Image (cartoon, rainbow, N blue to C red):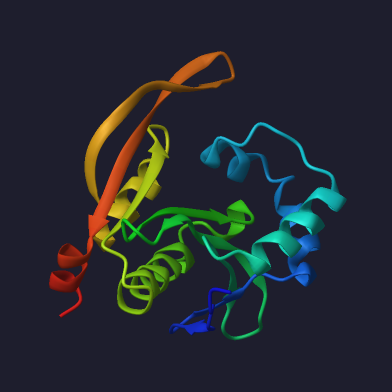
Length: 182
């Protein structure tokens, strides 16, 4: 099983998601803005979220972390390295803050930096990639700030409220990460 240590920053602690996080994750699915920013249209039952938490805790091809406030342990969201390909040393990246009240406070930026450090330094990944929708410039800015580079666009990839939106493809490579973290 993939070892998933606790990752500690200045303001956040990333800890592996467990079944105990199911309620906070389920509650976050009622935040309309978080759902829009991640392009999440489907609905989930609480039992599906519990099963998801159980499954990911045992997974060897992903590292799912709860983003929690360092000062009081409050669940702020989740950050994930998924689809890990050990043979290609690559993974996908995903982050979702649980509620709009956490936006713009630096939690996402710090969580992103911590998971990138884990991915490159501990898991020895070469490439981490993501997709971000064109209506989320705040996230695009954060990704660029930590070193992701735009590499393409999936045109009209998401239909939301009757309008199509592009998904912007971004990645960061291990040498780019190393150069930024000196």
